[in-house]
Length: 326
Image (cartoon, rainbow, N blue to C red; front, side):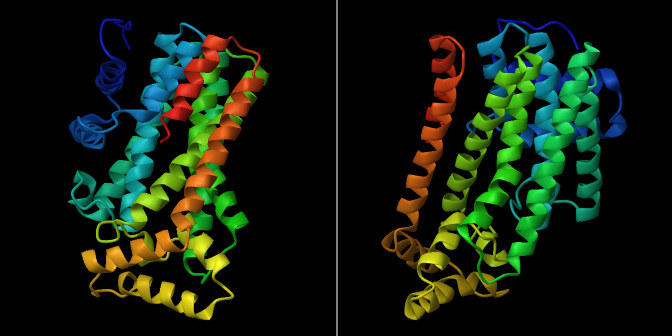
């Protein structure tokens, strides 16, 4: 990939990096156009564009001037995350409007596999072999851990209830591992020492869990579009309610009835049902609980940063990442 142009935005640098990688490697062949189309569909203007690449660039900027190396990691991370999202959407039957949901599942899975392999090839473009070995180990560990977390989530779908400890263990392995992996990858590529990389691991894990909790709460109120309730996913609001209401048979039955339309194929779950579920979640304190838990993880992330042996200006830039999780 060519030299970085400081006059363009980070998003443009990431998008350009992906385009150059696909053109120069030639690995995607005639599927390059589809891969680019899917990358752009994932990062439409108006939304949060290239969040993983932005995270790497932010940490890279904090710890060193290594944009040429960081861009390889950003491209790899964006491609990896895209593949993971495609697999998730196919498994959950979500986001019907996205291009990988408008073609046969087998074709989409094959293309997602290609994108996953391309992410590892993009990482291999790092010229410094010592850095590449470290980065590759982080990438592999991240993926393996996330797959373990995803498998736990599948297993829990068939259970009536799980504990809060089980939920947080899964969240750490799934969302926590991805964000921690991205933070560690950025730290390695920016030349951080081992102690800072370990701190970035813990910091990123907290950011990932915060993001997962936010998504859990948002998706619970989008049951017409999202499949969490229908599939019996153990999102934090429902796990919390299942635990605090287990001694209250009437409330437990009410929660079951509120969720049951979405669990029955073909049953209606429209705005009225969504509103009743929303009111129940609010009245029983699940939304407040999620907010408090997010605040706890944010505070822990700030404490991790405070303990880092880095300049106050560096801490300020990293704290901004926590503050953006609102």
